[in-house]
Image 1 (cartoon, one colour):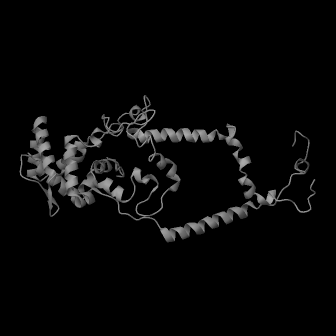
Image 2 (tube, rainbow, N blue to C red):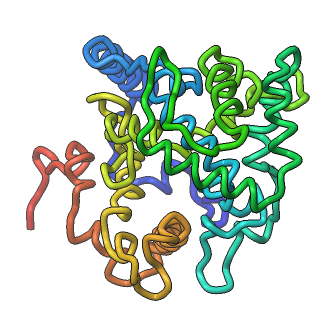
Image 3 (cartoon, rainbow, N blue to C red):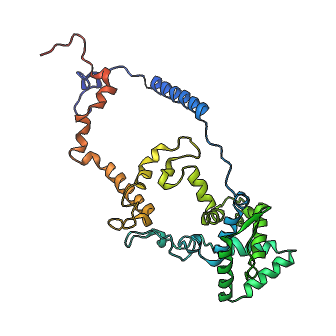
Length: 328
């Protein structure tokens, strides 16, 4: 206005304006949203599901617990061969050609599954328990071949295991010290001790649940609970809450891609498939977000508001014909 030498009244002369009370609009919006939120909270509430613990796992499915612990010793679990940031494996490494940020940052959270989930907890539990201390000593002094024979035999026997009074029993066989070790580990877990041992990190606040989650994720108990609660990727689980409660529906755009090729295929397309679906979807959403930012510069797309004038409905008072207006 100053460059044109015009006052504010002169500059806006001829521009139609309507009264607008911003404070009133904000108050009405906040009050309306607040009332709706309270009503929805009263009707739907929020799921109050007890946290899943190793103790609950050991009580709910002791055979799966012992089988998983045995597999940890054998190094055949997902976490044992996961890869960065936990170890040097490659079982769960996701990349797209040379683009592999998971490996770029290295092993930042080192986890030795066999030692962290089985050996170290048993060493703590062996204080005052001579039978367990002897079993651990026998295990650690055995050769790798001997340990493998015990593990193979015990793993096969667990397929027909029985549960009696919360204890896992298998048919007689040459399992070395494994029955004593697993029986004690199961007892520690059922008593809740293993939940505490796996979150000890040397800090004042023990809030790092990485190890308990990795251990439970190696078994079938946790994934079974996720399936029952409709939380798996194939069930659009990212946008769900436990039970029949509505979840974060704004996440549908991410969850949708897990249901579509190439992220559901083992063969894939352009290097993307089910094995690197997480990384592929991150890349795809990054590209789509970037494309959204340049929409105002794309001919055709930027003209959609003119072709579909929804704004005229929102500002219908402004666009309404004035009374007494002269029509040509």
